[in-house]
Image (cartoon, rainbow, N blue to C red):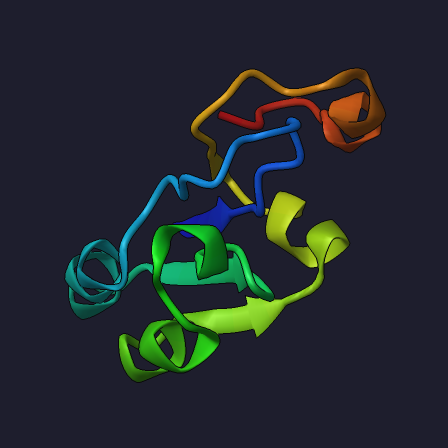
Length: 88
């Protein structure tokens, strides 16, 4: 299964929905995890930490093109264009 982690765009939101440790658990179980570049910076996690956990670093479009999207906050209107059938 493909999971996506996006950088939160809501004003003042610095959290990230998945830590590098979470990514490692999923990738070791055979899943693929796409993490938007700099998604974890505000929460203290670098791109390098995600890469070390076997995440695929990507742009926003790629992070949304998955089976399961993981977010902290509700999607904003500018993100509605990424909704697709069967996206969880």
